[in-house]
Image (cartoon, rainbow, N blue to C red):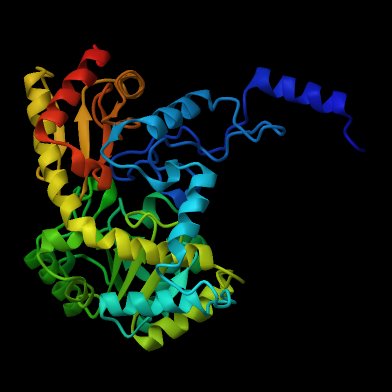
Length: 442
């Protein structure tokens, strides 16, 4: 039976009174060993800064969540801020994003060539570029990093004859992929450590059961974007080799790891048997990822990519955006990392001067251009203070805050990213912004 306009109106009004339906997992708390669900990756459909939930009901006419007024307020504030530490491409309006892509496309490829079809053309150009940057034999473009890593780990399980993957409990597959490794590929995961850092060589060497693949997320985002030292990384890889295990790097943010390690990307990638990199988390691309490794592994991965539904007809917008990011953002990353260290230090100075009592900047100094800030206040109050500061002063210091995944009530944290816009900030700018933020929090 076709729904009439009057019936549709009544249904919308009823839904507005009752509130949107919630998915079964929404609001579930996680213990520290499970990680957290706030601030998820864009591949889940949630905004990495706001934590907006894609399962919330939407108004059928406007396409907007009835509860999105606060989110739209935040987005408006961030877009119009005169000063910000970073300006994520996801903040840009659709028209501006399309115009920017069209304006820059000619700098990375010829505009009179044919578009790509099932992975050739500019997509193949991007794959070749990635293999060259990482020093691997080959690379394959994937529409999502989730798919790329599932395929990589599935391939290694078949090659090693062991379907057990050792990884950190805060690693992306454990926190952000809804059990995909087990559900789709029959893989089993084990955890050499539960400490908020990557496992040590001794922990890998002494782990009580065999595993076929060791996956290391560089940096470990949900622990605070933390990295081991270069010597520690070499040692943990060697420990895995002693156990006849292969090593896979979750390098979604590998691009910004080079300054911390003091090594170039090919030397870092050479430690692993395969590496995944993302094109939007750091480089500002639209979407997409690449899996790099030996020619035989990549060829097998292409087969599984097709089986997983990742052999898309055309992907040139994502490929072009990735190439632009490689040209424009990759060379700037060392300056972002250096500036993040200054910002983190001045945030600590500012909180101390404001007599906050307790705070944490983690890690200090940051290992990459991203880090965490912890304060003993509720997440809603902190987010409101951050939005008010942006609206009233034009300065965006912090974005969304989230309740701590464990510990006493009233403890919250946020993730800070320093990008191109943040290079303009001086030490005094940071300290002044902290003072203005604390005034609004009070």
